Length: 179
Image 1 (tube, rainbow, N blue to C red):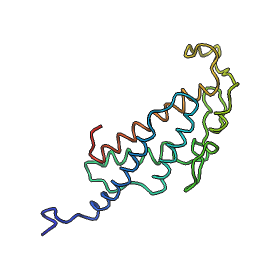
Image 2: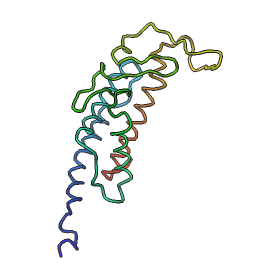
Image 3: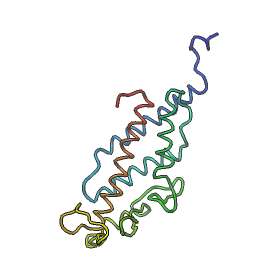
Image 4: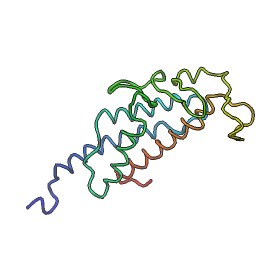
């Protein structure tokens, strides 16, 4: 009879209350990162965000959201487990439980730019991009961009902007907070 009046929480409701604590921690951690830097410290920012995501990934998927919030739960799980998850050929090449560092995150393999670790990109100050050719005329840069600029502008920054925004949005939706 108590179940009829909502006085006793179901197992799923209790589990979701526990998951909300993790979601709140995730939201606070991502928001605490602040705005994405505009210099080469963007690679340290990427490491910090990937460490936050890996902590959640190691704890397991979120699975107890009520029906009306399941699309946000699915979005959050996709961000944590698909987008930038661990893989030997993606950005984050760590094993489960391993800390993400500049040395085990990799960026590049775009627009004729080689893939290097985050710490290598920070040190690369003399490799000018030669990716422009007669088949593709790009007026994006004035002067000669560094390879690192290309990787930051076309890979690292968009990845971080999308993931930060969507993580915050999904967490807020699951916690019932205004965007």
